[in-house]
Amino acid sequence: MTQAIGRDTGAGRLGAAGVAVTVATTLSNALAYLVPVLGARRLDAADLGALATVLALGAIAAVPGFGLQIAVAVHRARHGPTHTRRLALLTATLTAGVTVGAAPLLTVLLRLPVTLTLLLAATTFATVLAGRWLGELQGDQRFLRLSIAMTLLALGRYGGLIAGLALGGGAVTALLLATVTGLLALPLLARLARPARSGPPAAPATTRDRDLRPGHVMTACTATLAMLTISYADLILARQLLPAAGSGAYAVGSVLTKGALWAPQVVTLLALPRLARGDRRARALGLAVILACGAVLVAAAELGGELAFRLAGGAAYLHLAGEAPLFAATGALYAVVFMLVNDRVASGVRFPAAPLWVATAGLAAAALLVAPRTVEGVLACALGTAAVTAAVMTWLVLRPRDRSGRR
Image: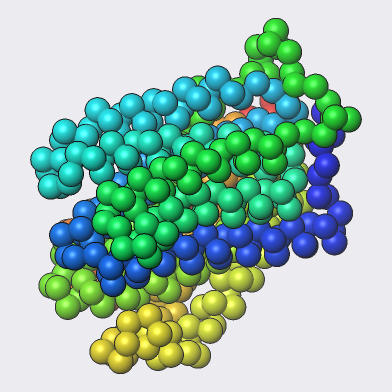
């Protein structure tokens, strides 16, 4: 395959790119965290609840954007530049259209102003469409530019919200500004993803076998949705099965789970283009780094469990300090699972996340029918599910091929 444009493939450049992407991810998370913190200080309870609900819906609606990014990155790494504009517009328009269609239902069931749900559709369109350019940069391994694009997207998604809240506006005003900043970010992303003049031309339309198809995006979307579902399933089950105090305590512990899960995700992001080309060394190295990161985080939770819970929730939750390494281990195992799911997506497996849906059903059944209705009981189910899922995914990815090349 023709080499992609301007790849940051040297060891030094790859290390710098990893740092840059990590900084961009940290900034994005910080901006996302700042919105509810600022909202709690600027909005009344009704507006705050509405805005928090809309942001949660926005996170769900953004899943097709992540799927689009993965699909474009994998396809571009494997086949080189090709046409993605039409499919990206279709994905973004369809997602926004579903949001608009659901507006009356959301307005009634969640008691949301219809203006907020319509603005949610507009911000969703911008977020999903941005996945096209992020995927092109990721697939070309232009990671330094990708980090800039991620920062611009975060500023577009959250900058308007923060500005609106800081200026004393309500939820509608803040989301309206977020819509404007999100749409303004798109031309900047397109410019960042523009290939150098010396790069290879886009694949001609006649090469239909190399075109990115809706099925590729749908596969990546369902895989992304499965990863998010299984990683939040235990928290949802704890909310349903435990009393208020226990549910709150589990929510505090889940901060450690999410930290161990998301901390090494930059490794998966950097490895995905090479996984798409069947680079086993990249897969082995990526898994080694993720496992090492997980081991360090679990050890840190073992040694500093009290400090971790004090920072995450306060002194009222110190009685769960002994469970800190178990929460961290659950997240570390899911980080391995996410890496392996992305490898299966990159390899063109038809149903790459099927084991995750089965595991989610198993987790729900165990928590509902077998486990004690305690924090420890739900946590045991979550940890066991993560361990079994990681083992199954490892076997599926690493099992030997037959002579025809099939697994």
